[in-house]
Amino acid sequence: MLNFTVITLFPAMFASPLSHTILKIAQEKEMISVRTVDLRDYAMDRHRITDDYPYGGGQGMVMKPEPLIAAIEDARKKGKNPRVILLTPRGKALNQQEADKLSQEKELVLICGRYEGVDERVKNFVDDELSIGDYTLSGGELAAMVVIDTVTRLIPGVLGNVKSPQEESFSNGLLEYPQYTRPEELKGMKVPEVLLSGDHERIKDWRREMSLKLTRARRPDLFRKAQLAPDERKSLSAGSSRLYMALLHYPVYDKNGQVVTTAVTNMDIHDIARSARTYGVKRFYVVTPVKALQKLALKILAHWEQGYGSRYNQTRKEALALARLKDTLDEVVIEVEQECGSRPQLVVTSARPGGKRTSFAQLREMLIRDSDPCLLLLGTGWGLTDTVLAQSDYLLEPIDGGTDYNHLSVRSAAAIILDRLLGK
Ligand code: ADE
Image (cartoon, rainbow, N blue to C red):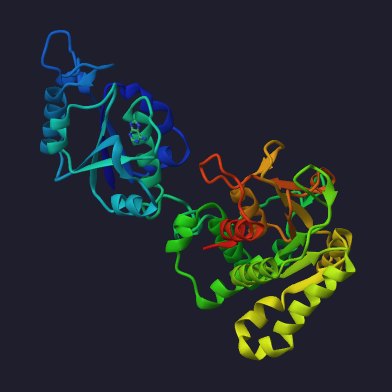
């Protein structure tokens, strides 16, 4: 049994949340009790005043210390060594681990602040300060309800199925896998085949994989702390291999806005291939229709792949093995489609302002979640032409160095983009 005492100016706010579903049942089964205490009962004056103006001036009112301290002392006296918690946006962040610890207590006293804050001296009378998130509520009441709810569901026996809290988001430090119920198909959206298979091992593996992918995409902070088996880490990094890259030498703009073909450079091929290999890109295409330039590029590649360079520097050989030459973007798209069985999503980058942009975070999540291949197009010269941009599925947000100078080399841009999309 966990006894909650809530000290608040608005006890009536708690009636509804406590009279439904889990919290109602937990009280009926005497697994929790919730007693609300009206702070006004501890006011020291005839008018039952609980707030006052802030010293030093400023907006709003501050909760007076005397009624709060009297209410806390009374709750301590009535209880058996309760843990006293002040709800405040300045508190330690509440998370599943903290909720777990609280669920093992016998008595919790929750103090709900209001107005602009609580007189600082009250802090000396509490054991902990807790925040439920980085936003400001109008008072601690909703935060206290969140604490009561999340803690109660962790008390053994409160939820019918004893195992279910362990499978929820955060219980294992990961976000929960996607759930489906009937119908099997809705407006063309099907339930993943594995969930209909009846193969419990496969279902378990699929759910674990989805949990890991979702967490990696949406909450890198949690993912970094997650405990992963070595083969899980490996199979997840294989996800990045659906990203292809193409460096377009045609069609691109020159300085005057004319559509031109730019020259192939040794440095671009080397550096982008090395970045591609580092971040697990599946292939790196160099696109130029000019035969003489293709010949030059082939010569560079042959030197490092088969010639003297391949013996001189093995790691360079490994990176350049990702590079392929193509005449046109269409040829690249066809080759990727043949290899993957579906047309790649075309992602373009442009330093020019405007257009509906996809953020790096959105594309990062797509790469982890979706199974379609993605082809990232990089423009040389003064950038990709409008016809290429119009053909694309996604326009990535520009890289912003925070200054008015925006002239990254395509090699540097490629490395920055790859780190944002695939970096750990
Ligand atoms: N009171 C106001 N905002 C709060 C928050 N985010 N967490 C806890 N108590 C609060």
